[in-house]
Image 1 (tube, rainbow, N blue to C red):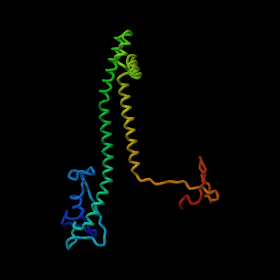
Image 2: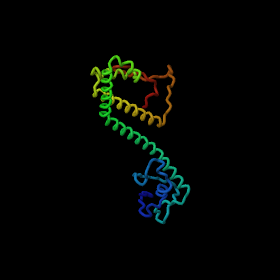
Image 3: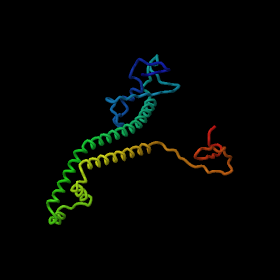
Image 4: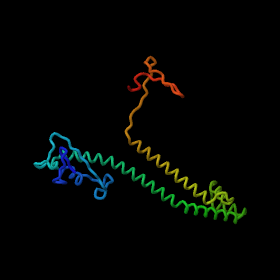
Length: 226
């Protein structure tokens, strides 16, 4: 919808500069948008004492002024850059959510397979006996934590449910870490303002003491707004 002097312009739809620039001169794919499929609304406000209207009834703003074309295109592209960053963050969060969902989905199968493998290794170690221990050590080198897992399975201290719980806990920890990294990345893109502490002048006039049940506060004049 186009408006001029608060009056909707109903004729020559699509002939205005905003529509022409949006359709022909903006590479939406570069900003992670599909203008043929995604619902994209473009609102352009052109304020000037000499607006290049077309038609005797000022039906639309002409697309034949290069300066107006460039200004409208530049404004839309700046908005697209901001929207691109937001879309990228949303897609990253969606990908992380889908990844967590898939990992959680396969936790029972993975824990069952791991426990079965550890149980098989434990039984093989028992069948080999003490005499075959040196040969087994030379054939298969295991780390200390792996040996500890096999020992826990042999002693019936480690069960399939425990493995499943540990895997689920690890997925949640990774998810929390990824969420924290996303928050830090978003915070880093926001503009920052320098802060400083002003030196305290002992001779500066002070406000009356503010008494509280747990503290007493004394402020110099000019800190609180009237």
